[in-house]
Length: 341
Image (cartoon, rainbow, N blue to C red; front, side):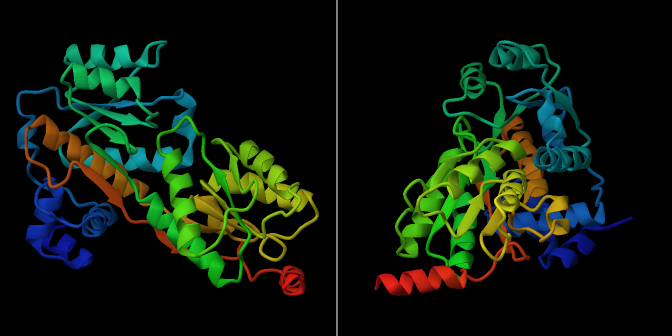
């Protein structure tokens, strides 16, 4: 059986730090917290204690999806749910998917008040999400996967955008565009704001038409890339707000007779399993989705048990994975820029 000492050694921290992280206590940096939870998942650590905060309760946490059950088939969502399941199992808890309805906010409150769940994790929050509003008004414990409400956890998109833009600038790119996520999502502002801030840090101006509203699916990424390639001055590098959007964008580049990584550099966000096996393999920002799911459960359990958590909001740091879909700015562009001087 794996011990807490083995988890601590694997994560490079003390056993006390592991204990604080598992119980959602202490002032532990987000990066350390994520590293500990990655070790917990990797070693399949099973603590002997159950969650004391959940005594006398249903021992079940609700999960609310905003956009239909098809989101469960989304690879990124599946990774977050895997993290939730892992953390819930560690605490001896179950997860319950809140039924979809015409009034999902009402459904969330009804399920919680019926005693089926002790709190709810809200996925894919929208700006001023009615689910969060209703749950707060009903004084029902809730955590958001995304920057909405009082208690939430997400990947630090601004850090990810800085990593992405800095990588492309280092390759000589100056005409960089963004395929943004669905603007109905609260997190979309983080992508756009992070992108603009990263451009400013690099002393670059936004390309005319350089931010295109994408969506969720590959087809959305393909349509967005078609729009970018049709610009009078198309970008030499494009950052897609998800790997799935990048998959579609890659197809559009090929259909235009161009080569990804040579004529147009392309980056994704997520590091989904297929990303490493594309041709060329996709350079991407790896988001700690499993750790996000784990943190959401920890924060919700702490809230249910009226335990003072270390943080009411957490932004977990992403990492850059460089692969073959990004390369040096094309020589033709360098020659064009030189002739303009």
